[in-house]
Image 1 (cartoon, rainbow, N blue to C red):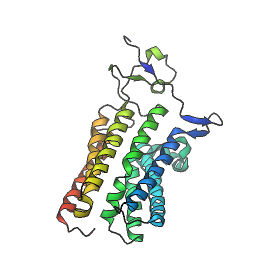
Image 2 (image 1 turned 90 degrees about the vertical axis):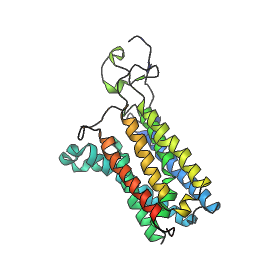
Image 3 (image 1 turned 90 degrees about the horizontal axis):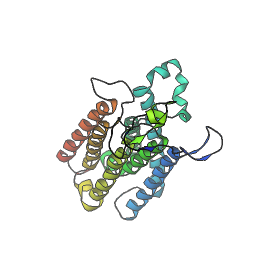
Image 4 (image 1 turned 60 degrees about the vertical axis):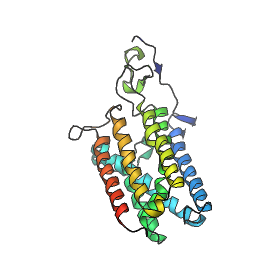
Length: 273
């Protein structure tokens, strides 16, 4: 190699009790994401932007957390590692071995939202708009945790900011491992950071959630899909292609179409939630 590239050597554990057990940054990312969501919900209620009182906030967040975690795990097993599940059905519950799918998390979150809207007798689209603004911080922190773990690395490249991920070629001498895009950080910036700014500005600086309930949720799905598809061109495929597309692109196309359909529906219906 003509350049000196940084070799990824970050420890995935904040605190390690044994070789394979301890407090992982990935787990902390989830905890911090849910704490941020709880804080934002409390702020929304205080400022009159959400009808969910403190008790309802706790119940709603619990339902969403269960939906996201269950959906993320089931989605990973079905979309990326079905063969292992067929051979060992208990693999579904071996969460300590890792494996979560963002698209599965979206589906699980939607199921949680349906339960929240029904149990609280609130319009689903209004509830969805509120919770859509809570997702990007978690997406950003999750991708940063992926980078710390040295997983889901990018494609081989020679850009000056490329990173050598030893896990991409276990056992190979570092000097023989090609540098790759730190695509996890691209995703953190676009799928997470960019959407945090956009959705918070739309939520606070416009009346879109009142005039067109559901539109903000559709915009979130559409923009997330666009960001994910863009980042997929820099990310090494981690599963077989589908119709020549990475699975991230394939599933994001359906998410984008859903987002577009929600926007069209929200623009045409009365603003009654």
